Image (tube, rainbow, N blue to C red):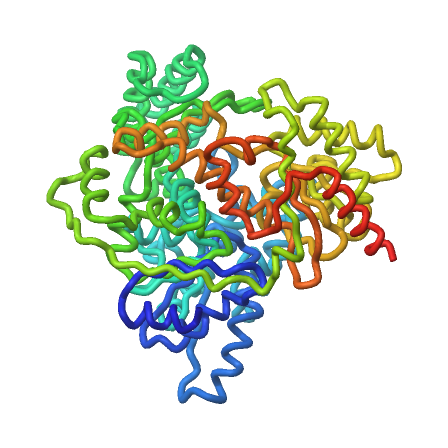
Length: 637
């Protein structure tokens, strides 16, 4: 892998690398990155991996580099501004709902804020990094009192504490670094949105690359709700002398009225009422922003005014994007259960492949790596999702999305390798498909499926991670197993925070942990704790998912198979990730049981199954129950 990455850097060719769990893929790209003669940016999807790179892998390599290189490479970490304490907010106070700076909240929240402020001052005195990961334990609410988003920042020219600013110091350090570690979202903002967040670079490694499209989409998604517009109007009132803030608040009422008669789901074409409301919010936000003074007035502060201007302008930009109703975006009304703010509008790009192709791959040499890049036995699905395709495909994509016809249509050269896995999946694991069960329906799990879960858990002696397609399914299975197998402790997502549930599951090898999507990826449970992974159904996206359904239609307009390109690819990725929870080290053994008979019977079943680790496959129920009993007996000994 290291040789392939080094060659990709040298030749300027994009590279996709599948490297299974336990291969040491981070070392496989870090070594050539540290040896490269230009700056390399490494982007991860999760904080856990970022922490591993910065605290363990990179320092270990740099220790070795000192003995063999004439010059020791330098590295830096760049996070979003909201991940650093803001010394202006720490020293001047945070705004309340009306935008007035207050010294500290009251009660337990106030105690947390005081502790965080003291920590920030200590960090500043000793030259620390001042980021959230090194802060004392705190809640999300408390951190918001000592940090700012980019739109709230005064900027280096105006802030009296700019010379001490933790975020600015992190960027200064990155400007002198050979290796810069960041996340997918910041990479997207820098490369795609054109907002400078990172120092100059032309070589990128994207780890956890199976997440890239989702993270880029997330970074480009915006929300708008009546409470958001109201909050902007209320805070602007302190700085606007005319009726502009009142007009903006009236626009929030018009938006609320329009949303009350708009059904949840995708909005293919806004009604006249909704279009008028969005235009009203846009125009009144623009007028309110223009009416705010450029300089601080008597009794005002630069910080409060700057933050309010940023909030009002954000409302304007989002309303304007929604009012345009571009074919390249998907607009929908999302339900917010139990929220006082009611439902909200959301907008996201229907496809990011062309954008990634032009702004990221077209400008840089990119290495994508993950344990799950081969879907359906090949790399094509992932490559297409990030814009790596042939000339004629690029032209067809441009035509259907309204891209300019004079774009550079040159083929982007790319290679792909699978470096394999240290695990012998065929000997360590079984993939059992319950072919005899009825296909899953919309009315919850069938009684036969619940019976199957009880029998599998009983044979395994607990030791089960249950991955379910919905919270309702996880809770139904939990209730049945608790009732029929009282000797087995069943932990269900929602009973406690996920880290606490994972700890309890690990400490009691005969327990079960049932949950939904957050358990499908990133949970590491090696050993006899987890000898059975149950997947209740193929994790296709919901048919009414606005973004996924829009993407399927886009592929079909281009002449492709929307179901296979979007729904099946989405399911294949999750199945690969879910099945990957079973074997985490060389001595692990177990069974992945898929209780969806379509995996064995449907035409697309082969594509999905070939996306999973190469386990020994069977549909023999009795064989699997016997194997689980043997594994339980061996683990108990």
